Length: 401
Image 1: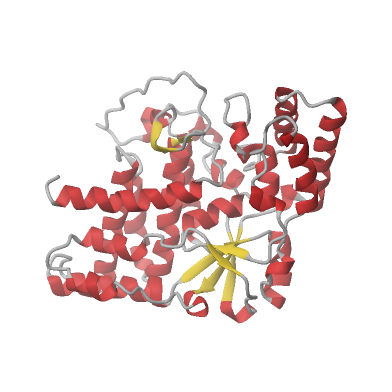
Image 2: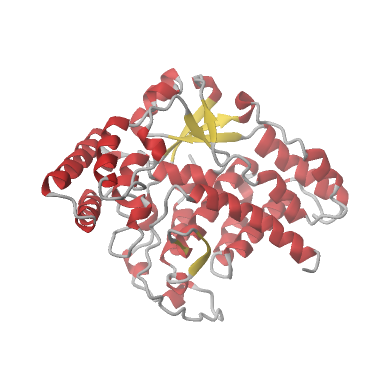
């Protein structure tokens, strides 16, 4: 059972998504195509931390401490950089308690904390592969073979051809038009869950996640909810926007509906294979000795970041994986998390979700309508940039910059 199955954690994550005080706040991390939803980004940051926590902390008695600390953190952070920094500091505190150390300041204790995290997260840690839950039994029985995990490139080419005729060459990503002989792995728990929510990615791209859906008139979280009507309407609206002919629109929509039914999208749940790093020969960091040697001069939070931050947003794997090289975990759906708050709690004003004395400063509504459900595959690059930016942020802060 994953930590995201815990009801208290689901409520916490739901509050992050529903937090009205940051609902219209712009993320400082963006691309030329879109602004990312602030609440959604916070959501993936905390999901990333929770999965890492479960991999590193084995003492179940520390769970109440985790709950209390997170409940305070998620309503008091002022930026994503601060949220990441605070979570990494919390991880150091929890490891200190598990190891029964007096403090996390002395060089010896810092070295012990870092060595423990390194052993749990790198040496005995995992890469991740997100795939359709319909394939779960087969994968657990026969392993993961790249040739068995391919998307329907032929159908995607038909849709791409229609859109390219209307000068929308970027509607379907080039990678989806090719017959691949590899699978894409990642060492980022956040990315793994992001992709698990959006399997199969070609359906998510067609119905909600393409950069062509950047305007507010589209339902950006339609595929997260596996809402066929909303996804269908998104695609239909886009067809009208680019002036498809009736025949072209019928072909696009019928192809999408056929693929939706074949994937049985509404029944899918996030499914992730935890692949042993040792099987991939990625169970060692060349710079670990340097990290441990610098405990006298480097803040512990920075050192933790150097160990657990993503180094492989995408790792292509061409060879098969035997079933003894990984384990499979099912995660809660987006709807499950969003609905974890009771209907009564959802009607409460956001101020009541914050501790007494917490001052809420209303954020001005932006010119566009915000939807925290929107993100594209470009999040790969963005998450990686944030991890690097946070390290830089910490270095500058502790150097007095």
